[in-house]
Image 1 (cartoon, helix red, strand yellow):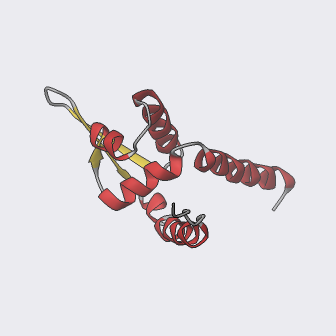
Image 2: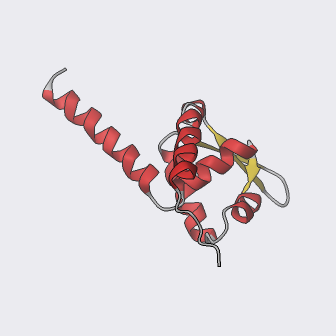
Amino acid sequence: MDSINKKMVQCDVSDIWHVLGRTWSLVILRNLSTNGTIRFNELKRLVSGISSTVLSDRLTELEGHGLVIKKIYQEIPVRVEYSLTKQARELEDVLEELGQWANKWKPKQKKD
């Protein structure tokens, strides 16, 4: 692989790490993985504490990186649904293992 192609691959990899490392991204992906196709307000209720603006921004970023599909239905009112792409579905095992790891190493709660 020549140096130009190598730089492009490294850039793409660092881009995806940046997107996945953003606050809420993994939580959004986990909820889409668990719930399948879901509407914006349903997802907002599931991701406790996220603002509509941030949720919209993260979904747009994830869609731009090929991880989320946004489907708009031309109805009144307009219905918008989100789901994972085939590419993102390949992350499900990784997300599951990450969740298991987090549960194994989460701090024990003190009993009063």
